[in-house]
Image 1 (cartoon, helix red, strand yellow):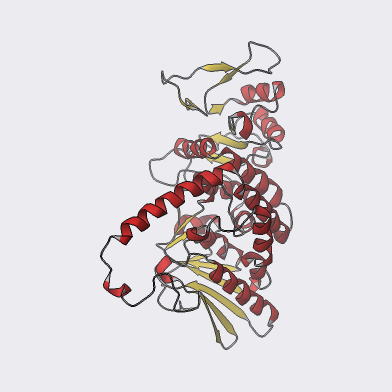
Image 2: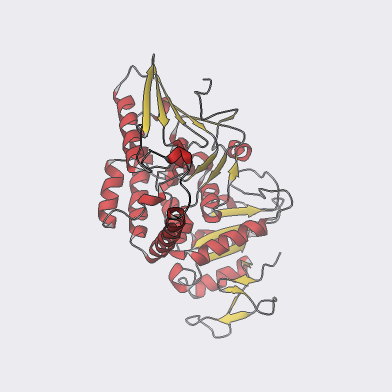
Length: 407
């Protein structure tokens, strides 16, 4: 188990090498370019230069073999540093006591279906190296966002859930003013312009004739009272219920209504169309003038803060491809029911952001911060069965977007 790829990429020889790092106590102390360090190596490097592993130094990832008491010491020392800290164990047969609470952001193993907080291979035939490679690639691409995310969930996991939502908004808004999000947004806008230019020359489809494109004909959120139940329906099926301003405001208002009405015994949240929710509406990304305004809006018209007023009465029904907010918002509910074909994904880090719809509080509280970090740092999809095994979903049974699911 010797992964030979450093933060800058694969070594040309394929065998790896060592690099002398300025600032170490002795000139003969070298930094191995292996992704996974022995605890003794990691501890030596951390003691020599505690600031070596950080986003701004080009080494935002510290991966350590989780064996022996020194691995615990490494976790306890590095948990305060601005880096992503990963513990790796091929199997769980001989773990040192205290390793699971030592402070590692992610704990990877080669064993299938390991107990929490460990994550094993999600696909048959995979080892932990695939996940570690995905994490390494993400930390190389967006080191600032990755480190901000891990620091946020280390803190928010131990505070009140509402305070955690506010902390997430501070982090998200700060990153919106950063270079990683700016680079993603520029690429996204360029790709959208190319698509729109191509669409302008394409034949007009029959169903679009006489209907202004982009103009909603129905509310973005439907609220239906049925006895003592309140059904809240995401109603932008043509765009997989992407969270626009209208949908955000509609959900916040619906949950505020339920929270203020004691005669509402059950709130049932579902999505119309092929997917429950595909996350934020990318056409509106970057539209607010500055991060301070973005934070003010996000915490004033907050879906999670509104939902928390009635969360103990909410059942969420998920189906299709659920992305970003489509995972984070349901996770606040008392009960989550998912269709067997549902996939769940947290893609925000690749955009230079962190989850922004409460996921660093809701998902963390359902699956633990280590597994929540795994989902964000890899960006990998999670199937409904695994989500149920982890506790992100409470029940798996058929859910459709064209009718109310049976209660």
